[in-house]
Length: 188
Image 1: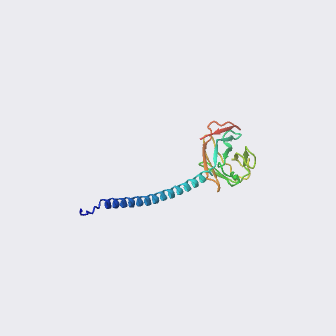
Image 2: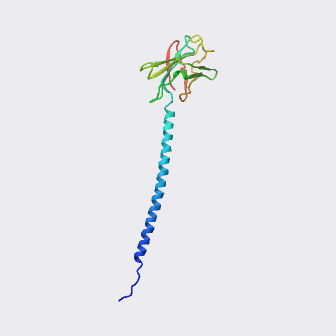
């Protein structure tokens, strides 16, 4: 009878299989942790994006052009008319909370209250647009403290601020060749 020789080749194969299985387990745990971190980061990014969309969605959108009416002497702007659209996909803008500021390099005037605003389109409770007619002379609106004089070719800024929306500023220049009592569209 032959002496038995102990062959450990099968044992080596079994050890290799156990090491391979250990690598697979470690790799799967690592993959689980990496995927969990990726899902967490994706969820946080999604929350940030939704928050940013909500904030950007509450911006007042100015509908071009801004319109002005020239005074009777043809030298100054009498009214500034601006049309806005509220944030899309959300509740209507509360125009009573919007503060308007008209300024030039020499003067600044602030207007508040919703009585200058008029709804346009839709119905009065759910308008598509809002327009505001801003008087620049005390003769047109005795509640303003001083006249705001904006002459030919003069730059002016209208700022709209509200607690509910992101504010915006509109910078325009009066036409250089204004005619008495005429209406002009001024764009940026």
